[in-house]
Image (cartoon, rainbow, N blue to C red):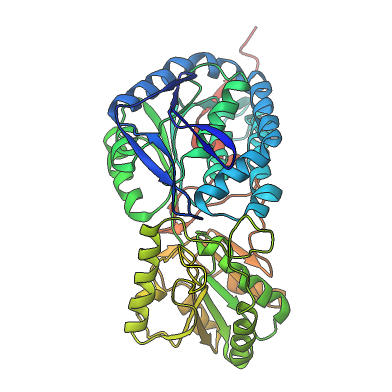
Length: 486
């Protein structure tokens, strides 16, 4: 069961134990660009999940026993294969979810290769030995032991990159993997399976089960042989996963939604702030990290709003395969209806629509216009709920106390951005923002060795650097007294 997407052949069956497995039922997956069906995909259920977990469980002892050094050649080959297929991956993913082709080719897919390479190398450094003062003449040896079968559930907005962000540390740690990609965007996960096979990963080390969250996903997170669950997605889904995981006391790592503040002080570099503010429409707003709430100091509010509107009017929306395009489409008709529902309710609540607020009259389809609301009433849904579309709000503040009250007034705490030339002020405000990541005078600068995750409803745990291994491993401390071995 295969299909052709952007001239590339993609197998739409599951990948279990290094073999392609069909299911009695299938489901269609579509293009965000054309809304046409791209192919039918195997629809996994408890049966396929059981097969995949069993394959991963059987492969685990040998894969774990290789050690970080023994696993390194497999993972380096996988990273090199990703690098060699950047064009294919970018073309398929863009056709599927509507992400910008140029960005995928130049940055996103290459980041996927870097994710694998980085964690494979870092695994070599984990574990350390030190003398202890608490117990005289004793030595502690910390080891990062592989946990077992790992369930990885990934979203549709950056499916390939976010898959490798989880697959990299999970495999490098010595775990085996069952990956369940989002049903709207299943195709690049299948290409990753092809590359895992070509890289020589032993049967069962890496598995892919396609399907719906309520079927394949639910069966996977409830499985008694799954030892870790990593999920990126929505808060309601995370709560269901947490409930299932609790039955087996399975540790979870959640990266969830955001409603991040984008803070602009009067003493900022205004050009820099405006440039980064426009970037919040990236991927048609389908980015969990986006600073969707523009909070601008009152003395420059009118100037900022005027300049922002002028520049937003020049954003080029269109086919994401064209290099000139800055804003592409939303992912599906279902998601567009959800985004538009937020917009219509904001209008009804009395917010002022500065621009946008509808599907592009010239493009039609899933091309929802970049949108901005001002004068939003306190307590309005649009200020507190994640839209996950090209919809921003703008508010003014006159004091740091008022700013912090606005910035922290949501159930989320994923990220924050602030722009000021005053370093002391940046440090002071950052220390009081409830957010997993704070960007000062920049946006979306990422370091794989740094922690990433959210506070409050934005998630549980941190990924990146040793924090990933803290999650994907069972950390053991072995202590011995000096001079007791002869």
